[in-house]
Length: 476
Ligand SMILES: [Cu+2]
Image (cartoon, rainbow, N blue to C red; front, side):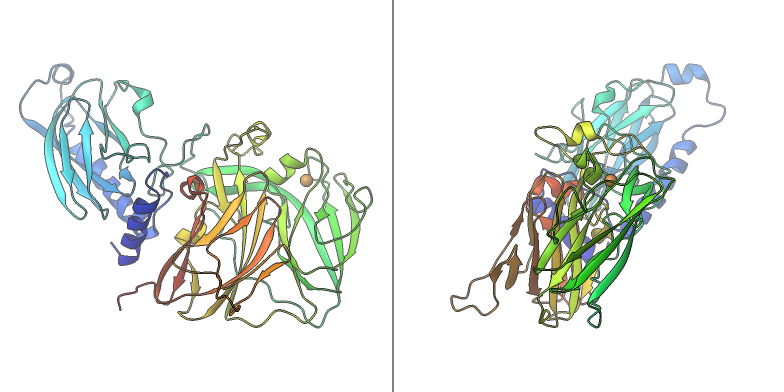
């Protein structure tokens, strides 16, 4: 296990004790995959072709039939669902890949515990009805450390005790009413690097073409999203105060519904530029950038909640007339929620409409945990600028980057400046839906700096990324 992965694991456990772990690194995934195939081989070894049916019905022998290897990590088991060919006595080999202690505890009290990095074994009787197991350390089962050993051909004793459907990415999926599809395509990484300002242009002609398409929003979950320009979020538009922006909105005839666009950076009449256009139509939405900031744009066609929840939003950066000071790295982050509809269907308006909405995923730039898997890169000591927008539609964001302090924040026109006389800084930027900010920081040393919303129930639901300084290792 890489040091980086171990650090992230430890971080998740320390701070996210009750959150549901998302996916792990590719390294852990491949390790788990190879381990899973090992598991399969191991099980099939215990199923001799000649095994008579009578033996399966009445094992009762004291002989150990096979060894089942189960890896623990923060916070889950791999595999979480195992199958054995017959009831009887099995050796459970707990390999703790995590950084902290875990155990495997069965209903009959059989338990095996292992510290981080250790491997321990115990024998257990698996009844014909199968045997659910958990990690008994407080909070761990609730965070996803559950599993079941089933006997082939038998129904599990308690289906509700079974582990949640694995997302095939190393960690248990958040509890959701939609079942993960193991055959879902991999997600497409959204490039978080900010576009450069076209400084020699005062009039920006931009084609904004609606595209309704399937998109993997989290490993195993595909939604039929509505997009501006084929991505969620839509393209980042970057202009300067005083510029003219001419948006050519096109709704192709292949679309299923009418769409529109509403630019918060514009001052126009709602019933003029923002009106909906039917499939096959297009319109021009022209505006001038009068105010600097990080602005939202979104589809406003009724029900607007559904059009936003299904992917129709994006960011506009309006720089002051004199421009922003040069920095070393610039990233854009749009936080938003997914209320999953059935696989390959549109997001659930019913779930999004709840008075107390409970999103299945809260994500940065459209996809759960994508920058945890693919950290944003910077150099230690480099000056980093984040343009952050909370597209909602309904949850607040408390944007925070662990291990950093924001020395510059320009939120909705309110400015905290670096080197202010009182020496003030900022730890988290509160962004209600449709609010945006420019945030600047410098990393202190090589290492990993988790990007989160400090509304921590959502960190385990996809709102986790990493800013990696240098090689990500503080110890070399
Ligand atoms: Cu729309």
